[in-house]
Length: 349
Image (cartoon, rainbow, N blue to C red; front, top):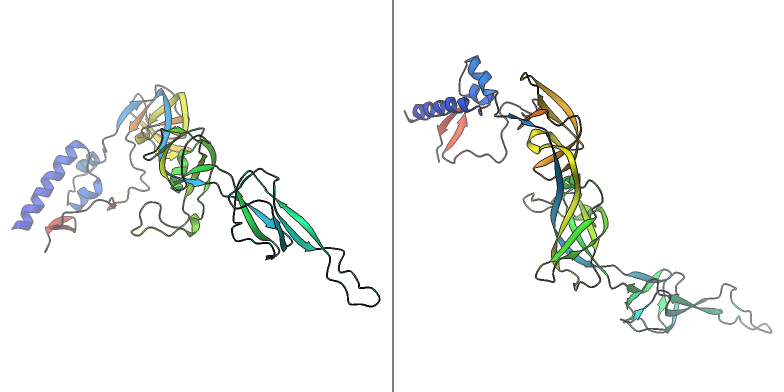
């Protein structure tokens, strides 16, 4: 008896929703409604014509960021050799071209023969000076001693500039929101100094992104590829430390006096899309359009529409993806009920 009461209540609810134009044909079929007229009414998804207008759009993103010290440049003993002299101590501030280490290397002319048949003398050597490849602080010399033998290509020291960059990871799909290299970036350090401009450096693959493990549970940012990352130069007068956290406010694009429509009136959101144009006589036409900047609420239409035309908002679902029985993955039925043959029945638990 309880089962039939639940079925009857569901049917009454279905009929009420049809009057509002929100119930899909597939669900009406599941409830056993066979009236063709009722099914036609169910096709109305609630879209209404809205007029195409001129407007202004500014796309802004706020990203979590981490401050990183710029990596140093190596002082490398290309031909190896033996350490002969240290010009500076570890931690010293040097300018590009300053001497760092002298290294003895074999003379390319080869060993010198002994006199009067004596055994050859020790191989001749020459001293080579290794210079700083950039301005910055020297590190790595604390364990280097005169007399140490260096393998060819060994890094003797590193010269690191006193510069920092702010780096923000970007999920791969959000790259569609970058219409050009961002020029307006503000950096706000958590619990730090006031926000300051951060000059754009790069936008590309995340460092080590391919090796980054996926987050447990498939959270955002997990999975192979690692998305991309945005980097900007931290101002020299902004006090920061390696590893501090903050946020970047990034302007990814803007447009003024352009044709705009609500994003809900377009199928697609990057480069091109499709709208349903409503003529003055009420007829409808699916039309491809070019898309530009979007702020999440409105999107620029670069071609395909004119001011004064009308489009359906929201646009109906593309019929190629409007599959009967399709369900939002986030939609869940109550714990005490489940669907069986289009009917709600009481669960056991």
